[in-house]
Amino acid sequence: MRVLPTLLTLLLSVPLSLQANNDAQQEFEQQAAVAIKEFASSLKNALMEAMKDGGPIESIAVCNLVAPTIAAEMSKKYGMEIGRTSLRVRNPANEADVWETSVLQQFQNRLNGGEAIQKLTFSEKVETELGSNRRMMKAIPTDKLCLSCHGSKIAEPVQAMIDQYYPEDMATGFKLGDIRGAFTVSREVEDQ
Image (cartoon, rainbow, N blue to C red; front, side):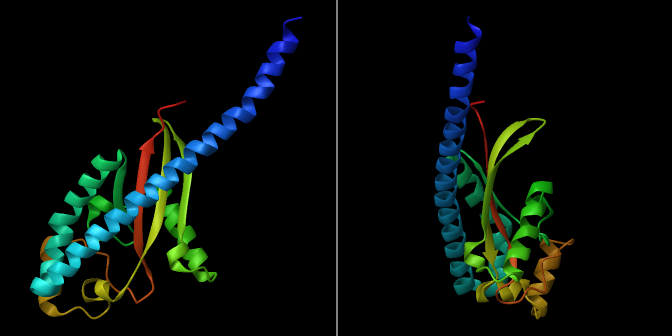
């Protein structure tokens, strides 16, 4: 009877497959966390340097020109797509997709429930019509550095520069400690 060995093989392979998927997800999460940390650090350093050199107006240029370059470099270095998104984007190119929107809404609910903003991360394997992706997001807190360009009281010359670079801007009115947006990471799953 060949049915019994085939059934036994099938039953034994399911837990092994699940464990392999869990291991791959954990490895992705660790790599994504490292990539996000480096991206966040590089971006913050560039923004702080710009603020020191030319104030908020200079930092707008960094967000417009330098941030996409840093994201592309990090994406290439880590072999995954790395970027930023928000429910209220400044740059339409960073608009959240359906999955990211759902995660950002979950982050807001978790923050409202008392969870620390620094702990707001989420990852999962996502199936789409184009294949499988491992995805992860980490919330970006609004800190003091953000408020001169994303707060409620933006100086007129800064607002004029924002309007010039981002005529469809929706990324103002944030308060200290709000979720400004999130870092987002995606990698195609090659091993089906």
